[in-house]
Image 1 (tube, helix red, strand yellow):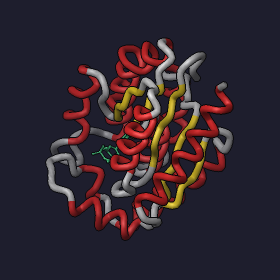
Image 2: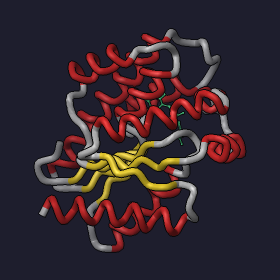
Image 3: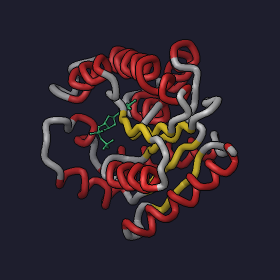
Image 4: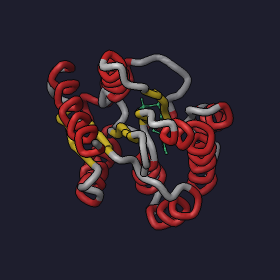
Length: 211
Ligand code: TYD
C-alpha cells in the first residue's frame, strides 16, 4: 500500500512464535540503520489499545460475532489513521503483528461464515493491504502448547482448542494462496534462528523490489 515506506504484517495461529520473530526482525532492520515502527493488532494506537481490552478480555460470549468484527475494524481504522499511514508516508518500515488477515480468519471463519461481511467492511473502512505478509506456519498442537504456557488475561481466542486451531492453520494457508503476491509462508517448526533467517530473506527481497 505504501508509496515510500514498507508495510509488513505477520500472521499465524496463536503460539506460532510471531511476537518473538517480529521483535527479532525489527532489531535486525534497526541494526542496519533503518527506521522501523513495530506495532500490533488489535491495538497500536491509543484508541485501538482501549478497544483491545474490550475484545480480548472477559467472557467469550461478551460480543456477538458481528459486534466483535466491528470492534476489530474500528481498532484497525484508528491504528491506520494515527500510526500506520503517517509512518509509511515518512518512509518508515512498519512491522505489524497481525493485520486484516487475522480478521479474515478469526472473525471470518471461527464463529460462522462471516468472510463476505469481513471483506465488505474491509473494503469500506480499511481498503489497504500490507506490501508483504509473513505467515508463520505452525503445527496447531505445538502452537497451542506454547500459547497455553503463557500467563495473562487475554485468553479468549486461545481457548479455542486444537480443532479450531487446525482449521485456522488451513485457513491461513488458503489465504496465502489467495493473496500469493504479498504472502510468504515460513515454516515455524524450525528452530528460532532458521525461522528468523527465512523471514530476513523475504524482507530483503521486498526491500530490494521497493528500490
Ligand atoms: P495476542 O495476545 O496479540 O495474540 P498473538 O500473540 O497470538 O497474536 O492476541 C491477539 C488475539 O486477537 C489473537 O488470538 C487473534 C485475535 N484477533 C482477532 O480475532 N481478530 C483480529 O482482527 C486480530 C488482529 C486479532
